[in-house]
Amino acid sequence: MDFQIKKTLKKTIIYDEYWKFAYERQNIFFKKIRDSVGELTEDPILKLYKFTNVYRASDRVSQYLIKHIIYNDDNDNKNKNIVFKILLFKLFNKIETWTAFENILSKVNIESFCLESYKKILYQLYAEKKSIYSNAYIMTSGRSIFGYERKFMNHLMLIKTMLDDNISNKIEQCNSLKELYNLLLSYPMFGPFLAYQFAIDINYSPIVNFDENEFIVAGPGARSGIYKCFFNAADFTNDYLIRYMVENQEKEFTRLGLDFIYLGNRTLKLIDCQNIFCEIDKYSRVKYPWITTFNKRTRIKQKYIPNSKGIEYFYPPKWGINDFIQ
Image: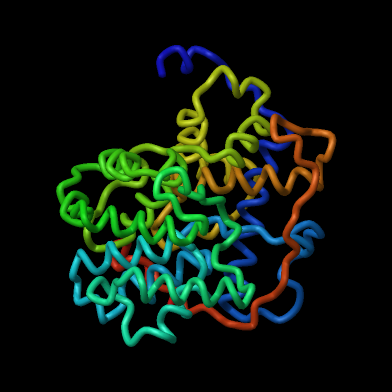
């Protein structure tokens, strides 16, 4: 990084928007928790379109994973079972697919894992034209690896492959987040971005407890956001620029007069700042449509639709912030 330190960052107008967006989106999060009366925000873009939370762990799917899957009493802290359930849930990344498994099977755990049973459930969802995957990120089909026409069958085979390889034991032997990431990257169908996302999800569990600020892998949306925030982004690595945001967050909120509400004593981590880059890329498509990057996108696909199902927020107990939220 030495060569980067000698260079001066050249910030665009969207750099300040990054912090303003984070501030306002976090305010919306707390207003929802408090059931505040009136508008959640006066920002017309945040009113109209869907944006993820500032903290990755606060999003609905992550919350479901943490509370109902990882820290479910049925797990009894059995690592093999926790790893299996994380893999099964995250490969589809959709709450409705998980609940379909739960509704038909007596119990969703490693002991119940049978290709035929799970295959039957997924084919039923497919026949009913129900969505099996979330649209948060695109999973590769795996057809060239496992040979099945249906993507979900190849993903079931991927889970079986990982279980047969004693994945949970290998996770326990990892000594860092990067080592966990490299382990996941060694399996078929796992690219860099997906391996990193899964490593973060596993790090929510009691199995490992690595520093989230150890390293980062930027997704395509985040890379586009980075290029919108810095004129000379190409002179720096994505890792350096995301880490810059982590290290300067308190200073920048203060500079802009923004009283950002943290989750207790938990500041924004690399994964959170990476996500905000992705969201500011989307946000700026509407506010600054003339500013584009390599993805050439000029609109936001998903509109904001209020969800009547409330969330009782619960974070990994090892973070020590649940009392603050409650």
